[in-house]
Image 1: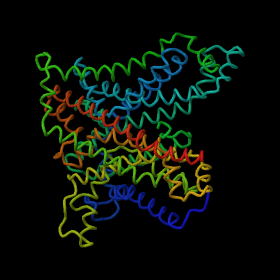
Image 2 (image 1 turned 120 degrees about the vertical axis):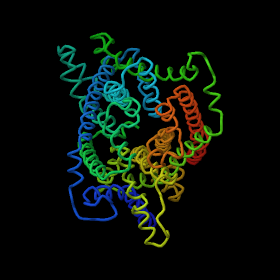
Image 3 (image 1 turned 30 degrees about the vertical axis):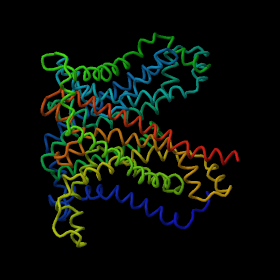
Image 4 (image 1 turned 45 degrees about the vertical axis):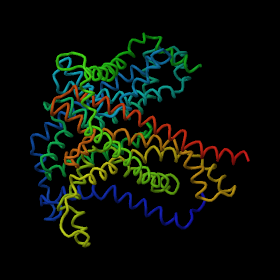
Amino acid sequence: MKSPNKTAAYLFPCLVAAFYMFLYVPIIILIVSSFNASAYSYEWRGFSLTWYHQLWESVEVWEALRNSCIVATVSVVLSVILGLLFVIFSAGTWLDSLLLAFYGSLAAPEIVLAVGLLSFFTFFSVPLGLTTLIAGHTLIGLGYIVPLLHSRFHELNYALTEASLDLGADYRTTFFRIILPMLSPALVAGALLTFILSFDDFIISFFCTGGTTLTLPLYFFSVIRSGASPIINALSSIFLLVSSIVILLFSSLKIRKMDFF
Amino acid sequence: MKQWQAQNLLSQARSFFWAIPAVVWQILLLYIPLVFVLLHSFVDTESQFTLAHYAALFDATHFIILARSLALAATTAIICLIVAYPVAYFLSFYVSRLKNVLLFFLIIPFWTSLLVQLYAWFTILDKHGFLNIILQKLGILGEPYHLLNTPFAVYLVSIYCYIPFMIMPIYSILEKLDIRLREASLDLGATRWETFMRVTVPLSMPGIKTGFFLVFIPAFGEFVIPVLLGGGKQLYVGSLITHYFLVSRSSGLGAAFTWLSSMILIISTVVMQWLFVRVIMPRKTKRVGYEITK
């Protein structure tokens, strides 16, 4: 690389530093406020874990967390299984061209998907709740998992599959001993991504629960709407911590979210 | 060809029946519901065909709301592009040792709930928040100004939340860009600026395009940001759709509005696609091509 000229050498780092400040000043203030004894972030009354304690004691948060975990876990399991089945059994058949159908949920704005789901469920009088939420989140999850698995599956070295079959392994053994291990990074990545998407999703949850079920983002929304509470600072900090851990896990898999773009 | 056969072996093992559930899931919960919404928009409360819902949409309020959302989406996408490009450029060409750290800090907000990112701004934009305190200390503001519940807050936070979606695709293209092309351009006498405009930018167009639509499409239908930071006083497409479906329960009108705004979104996406392909791209690539052949 050629040595950058003077302006670029100074201007660029400054611009990028300013950008990172823009990105992180709000987050840092948020985290610091979560340890502030005062309910108002502009006055510092000393370090305290009051808000974390209140968060711990809150019944609603635990209920929301439980629901969010149930919905995210079930959607992940469903999308991984359905996605894997589709990718493996569609290869080389006419069904393979239906891959395009899975891009629809990525291309449309989420609110349109949410409206569609709501109209569909109300038309068939499906009671809104955890089940409808899981259905909606699996829809989103499949939209990410299927293209990811599809591209990984078709990048696999076919010689290994062939060798395994040539050497006398049956289809089941070949699948579990050869194909599944080679797909596992993509599977874990897709599962983590779906989990996070489901865990963070607001719009679909807002439409598909009909106010019956509380998930964490819905809890967040209702608290912010009814006048912010410092408990939310604590909850946000935990969210940030969790997503950093997930990213670290993710980067160790060498598969990034940007692979989807 | 051989690959096809090898992959095929597995699907011959059992029937392709097992591939169907995922497809059914998508069709049943995505495509059929969209048709439902369309049918719903043409039906009145007594299940009779009607165009009344669409007729009701043709008034100034609805067009103002559509225009407001289009303006928000376009402005957000353009500002994100202007800010994101230098950052992506810097990350891919000027950083080596700190690259992973910088990327890590870029991705955290990307992976965190939109509500967390949005909430982070509350303490800053609040009437007694940091921005007001700083502006007052600097003597710019006499008395605290309510920054929340203003279009300013909506625009600022939209840009904040969507910017990683612009940086990522541009960065991933720039990182893979063949550095020899830039070196050749510089060697052949082009200035740094010419190299940037005629080589780097045209080659990174796919990333710019992806980023633009990743920001534009969700920003157009955004619901949370306008409602929480705009105070719900100014309606945007997302908040109006939600209002029709969940508050006023006039789902026929809501369905019609959803389809109208989807159509407008599709048309504007196609127009921008055309702009990218026909107007911005060829001029520069042609020039590059011309100079290479010369």
